[in-house]
Image 1: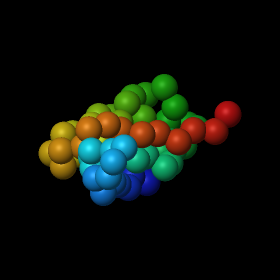
Image 2: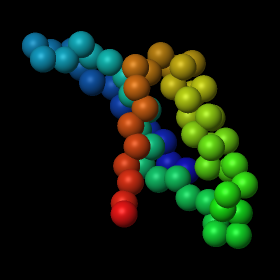
Image 3: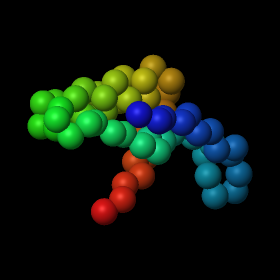
Length: 62
């Protein structure tokens, strides 16, 4: 998992909030469907709450 804390400086169009941006989350195939991805995202949610992030962003590829 690769998570970046992003801060946006306040300006005319933005309040200057902080977000947790998930660039990558990987679980090896033999461990799929066992809850590891959900556990990792729950960890990100807890991190976002403790660092006062207003949202979590997630990159994904099809």
